Length: 94
Image 1 (cartoon, helix red, strand yellow):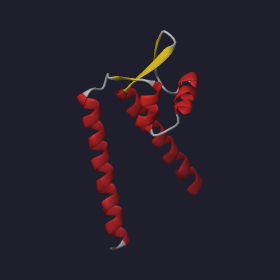
Image 2 (cartoon, one colour; image 1 turned 60 degrees about the vertical axis):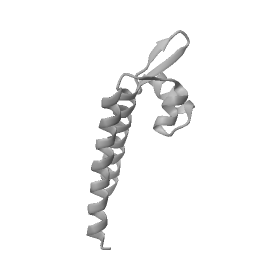
Image 3 (cartoon, one colour; image 1 turned 90 degrees about the vertical axis):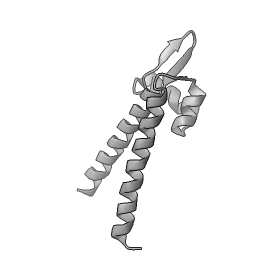
């Protein structure tokens, strides 16, 4: 398999992943998740969710002493982080 074939496969997989994210959000974008569920969804430690909430980069709704997160907000957060990481990588290449 050539490098061009691998690149093509990666592009196809990226498109498929984006389509799956849209399906997840479309099914129930307003579903509320706990800190632990949000951490599992983003595959990070729950403390990272708390930190991102505290600094204001991850939108949350406070109910009593607990925070909840919508799936749509989590997907948007992940996309923003990915774009920022891509930009940083491009800056390093220059």
